[in-house]
Image (cartoon, rainbow, N blue to C red; front, side, top):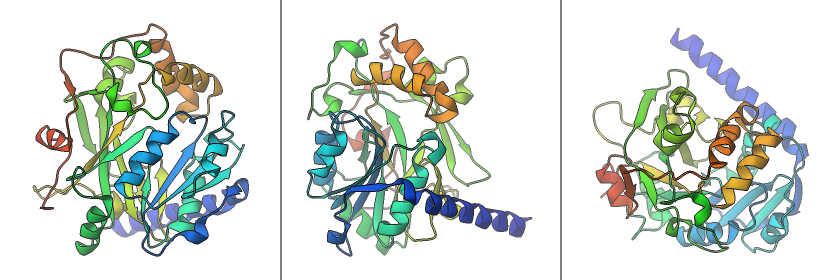
Length: 336
């Protein structure tokens, strides 16, 4: 049975790699600076659409962490996103007007770019509203983490997506370009998370937090997954199969310890719930290009129409990574 399962997974991996090859023709280069990528550079991969106002802080945050080169797929932006990215010396950007849904929500496009440009590099795959926090990130650059992972012969690093939100109605806190979003969205749910091992891909499936509490209270099993594997020492045979929730080969998804100990893990602070998101939720619900034909975004749009306060008496205000470790949301493992 185990050999049959492994064979099926190999076939599935070939399928996802073939999809990426087939979709590469949908990408047109706008600014291709990949020839400047150094052999040891740390790379970031992102799909983006109409996120011009978020980009300055996103790029600044990850430059400070130590990302050397950013690779973006722009999916038909109309707000200057593509033009802004093309002006950045450490950015390569491709554009496509093809369907985000039929590209497996951008997975096919990024799988191709990672195969073409990411091999033998540490690759961080994040959305523009996701901010990677790892042990000692306040004193050590990202390269210190990847050097330790290399020395430990670890190929992937997991992170839980932690939804952040303001206190008070979302629309009462307008976001300005270049602002640290966590000056506004500084609160999070410290508990109410469900963990379950996925027997197919061997990842730890996590649900809960404010999205389950506010938007999927009547159907918590349909709440978005919060488990991610955003940081990977890429190889040509690898492939994401469901956003950054799961990869093949499956061993890359085992970023938690099943033997009673702890592996080092991180958190992706998720700055979704800013004032910008109210109109975006309605737009994406109408477009139907996201997961389940936009069902998730229809849930957001319906609730956000009432301009709710996502804060509750159990909300915690974010301080630093050590706080998240104390709460059990991440771990430094044996990295001292």
